[in-house]
Length: 283
Length: 206
Image: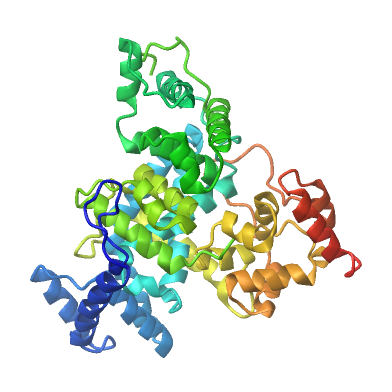
């Protein structure tokens, strides 16, 4: 399929990159892999250090391939050392991710410290299994993105195991700002007639500003069921009319509106609102 | 609903992230138009990415000294690894996670509701009440032999986690349920799905 190009409403990269872009990446990684000495030799570890000193560190994709070779050979010592090397390079990001998950507001403050250890262990267990499994081929092609998916799965598993998420335990000290929920509801009412929502007063403008960042909206909707999440994101954040959302998702306009109402109800029930009303200053 | 091609979904979302990180400001609308079969999965990933991944640093070029937190996490992870050995089969949850399948598409593949699939992967059903057809559908969805799936359903359920702070109540396992009763009681299951499973359960005399 041809690249669509920079037309309004088009994807900036076409389907050809699903194949060609990754093929080029694979070729580069293969070249790196074949340039390394055998991993069960001191020369291999020396080569790793030299590459790092030259500012051209061995890609993690290549280290995964070498690790899997070690597993296939039954070379436990090399496997162990490679796994630790990989985990060490991920340490800053993974520790920060654990912190971000627990700071995302869904967890009771008193339990966060204990949960950090559990969550990090879950992630390491998942990585230990996935990195050793040759069927997980994408790790050898795009490590960073495979890692994102692994962390996502660890996060979702952790929420289910601990009984968190919308409708379950929530942190009573963490509230979604009333202004944010109100802005969603005002927007929803305005869109029912598909008329543009005009900011008519200062408070509404403040509420709009509160949702300027996609990260804020994402944090708000991440606990919603997938279909509700999709509808909220497309209609609210990407400003798509109800009709377009319905066409994209192959559902009726009425269903889109019902999903929006259900999402707002769930958010209100799960998070509640702050004391002090809609003044944008309560948080 | 077709089974999600995990690798294809990962390539698509990788492009989305690359667009985002190079300043392209990708719109999910465009990706959904291009790949409608993955609409919910793309949004599910994108919202997770924006909420929890977008600000994370890239992996380090050098391997720093492992922190005490990382060493502790690795130690606990290694202790759990015997679950992958032949002596102790991997649990169904482990198999599902390793296949990168979320509950919603797995539920669609099994023609069950998400609440029932959640109970299934957490081994909340009495093993003897699970019909053979369920195992076959699971095996197809996970692309694994039926025997592996069967073993996973009899894997030991994980004990409750230990906590640094002692909880006032002792942790206990939840009792397991009869699958047929769960089918009858589920509020998320559609009438058509319920009828389908009741038909399946009938000949197997559950």
